[in-house]
Image 1 (cartoon, one colour):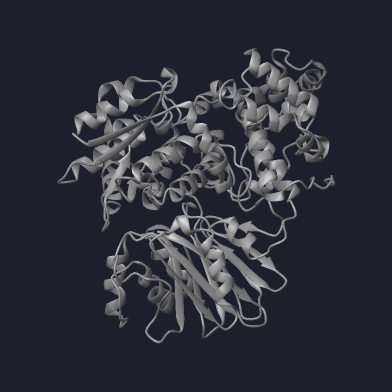
Image 2 (cartoon, rainbow, N blue to C red; image 1 turned 90 degrees about the horizontal axis):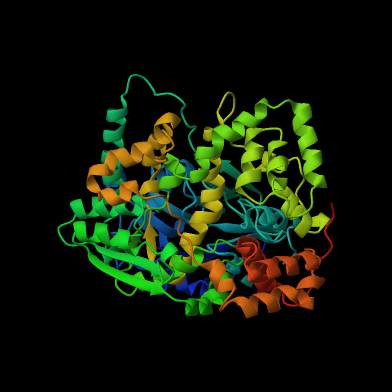
Length: 627
């Protein structure tokens, strides 16, 4: 596990000093080692967190004659089998690391070799013979990879800060900022800067000699099924899921350093810990986080699992003074990112890193198996489509006439949307009319959801149901743009590697073959996953309502965070940026402070945005957007 960076020039000679500087800013990703290569027009660099082959895994690593070089961030779980296969084909290895496998696999099969990999990865390969650079990102986007195609060449890095060091222009991408106001995070491939992009999950990018680059997709998230394939029974599918889960956990327990697991008290992390314990000869180290506020505290449920499997259990309780780390955390994302669960993610990562170097997590269960509560509402959203179009149009017009705060205003506007998918976005993300009141017109996405065309170009085609579309969005756009960003940045800030067994691509493809009716069943999400592992979990976990990984943000905003929030969002600097309606922001603050309305989501997104501007753009106002 590490961070990587580098560049390939169209003309001229690359300098090691620049790639060294690009890597210095991501030292937290790899405090154990560093390595650099400058070869003609290209330079590669890395910072290493040593996990496997601690003594000889130094990067960059080359092939036998030094014509192919690689820098790598991630873990390849099937590298032993691949190494044996490559040796049989005449390749010689000088290390025991998974990284070297990538070099010889590229020699054997070129970019197509990525199809053989099982793991999480972002890597760069410099082919000195072809004078070409290959960038690859894993299927689900667990490891990040940013790039900037500039007039003089292409630059890449594990974090945006690498590209800033390289001197990319810091002009704001207006569409990215509009998308932030909708989602509170910026989806792939956009970044906050026009000059930079994220290489999307399941894609590779090749820079040819002379600087021309192209992007190809090597893997797409599989389409969900609405009916069973063949004659497989539900019981048989449960058995397959259980066995595949155990395999995915087992291959992620390989490490030459101490290893543990996050344990939240929810179904997914508990299933991972149970599987680890059943396959381990020693007690599993588990780490849980709790809060003083009872409604946010899951420690009691986590203890049930820890006690059942006799884990070496560690707990930490977060108190309001944890807000002191807010600025540090927000800077780590390099662009506006307002998922507040980043706070406990960092705290539990930093806590776990005192004991282990690798931790397994339960991320991915909700996206693959339909665990989100909103999914129970999808039949209702589809039913609104039976309302005559003319009446739905009238409802939309009427909703615009209602004053702010009027009961049903957002509901009527949601009902008026043309498709069930649009109604899902309207009800599950920022409502259009709320954004219309808050955000200045130049920074608004269109009311007809035209932006979805660019975000959903890989959606299933043909006849499909709303649940399939929603699960596809959550498991691609949101997973890569929000959930995995949060886990990667916060864990790597603590120099902790996090592995996600539920996001193994084999298990992902198996889950896609599970009929939707077996995932969301009788008002119960993740039904088939729960049934597959129910006998391994305490009954209390199976009966409890779902609880997200949330923080008492609303309370903190009325307490330790209040002064910083008011100063940031009512000051002239914030107002002069021209992004939002300052009077309405003050109203949101007053409502929240008085307890009349819980505006934490909006206020947190605005606070994060202002903190980012002050840190990166300094005092310069945002240029007026063009519509």
